[in-house]
Length: 250
Image (cartoon, rainbow, N blue to C red; front, top):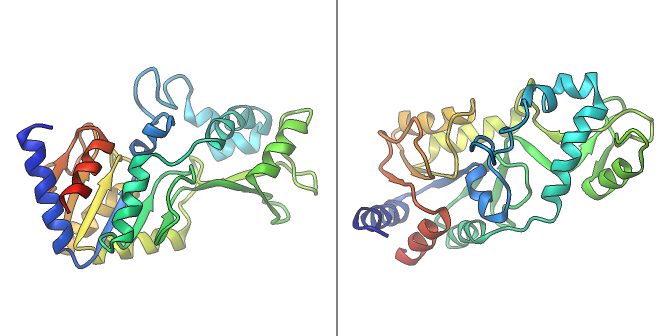
């Protein structure tokens, strides 16, 4: 770790200790060490070889549930056995020490926690629901119904296709979760953004809310973000190494 990175870690540790309320905002980058690809990296990202509007849009689910689940079933299977990595564990340690009040995540992979308040803005693969009758089913049961259905579509007992309880393209974020995330961002003295490009809206608005309210933003992620110039600290090395160094500095 270079001198600049060491200095950035020391400054971040100082700002984290000083904050009365620190909130973490996480994106796909925190789960990459668990073997989960991010979305936009060329050749390896989730959307590198498919058009998300064709396979992950709510209209695709309505129009052709078999094609939709051919993609999402594979994604569910790939996420099913993933485990939290060291970055998740270090974030839990920051919560345990009382240095982070809550975690807001864009991820649907169930790898955060268990500790403190978790806001899953994009939902979770933990369950799927029937929009016709309102029943919901846990992931294991959804996977069983997916495997057993001749068309490869997990179905409710009423016969209608299930929809994963994640926010698809063309859907709004759950209002209660979004409002809670916005409230946390406004009152945060420090918003710690980990593994997110901060491009997806309205999540990309949260750092602006913190800054307008007089708080600070720190960024631990590889690659540029629109808030790099406003951040009190920007660390762009290996996420696990940066968080290890941060915890060691506290």
